[in-house]
Length: 121
Image 1 (cartoon, rainbow, N blue to C red):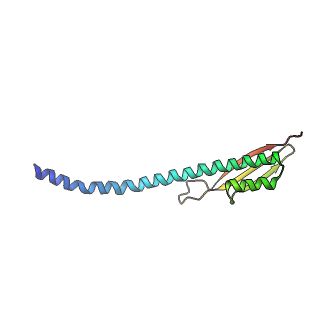
Image 2 (cartoon, helix red, strand yellow; image 1 turned 90 degrees about the horizontal axis):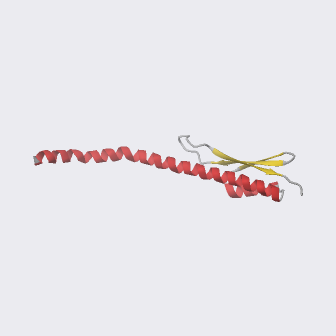
Image 3 (cartoon, rainbow, N blue to C red; image 1 turned 90 degrees about the vertical axis):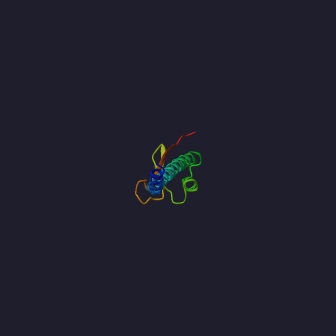
């Protein structure tokens, strides 16, 4: 009886290695996906916040150059800013790049948008 048990135990030694070899790439892929999605969310939040603060700066000071500088300070120097003015408002649109992933799952850039309404005192 003990020889049968020893043979079964000897056959199981390679099973753990095979399971580990299959599961490790899956776990690593999931970890990379979670990290990439976290990066995307953070960049999206920063991009929207930069647009909001730029719109507020336009309302407070009316200085579009300072608003663009604030966007670059918050969202990074690679962020793009565009201002669209109308009679009673200014729309601030921002586009912030994300590090592109090799699989093409994540978006290339995130965008933010805020509107600054002009008021007369």
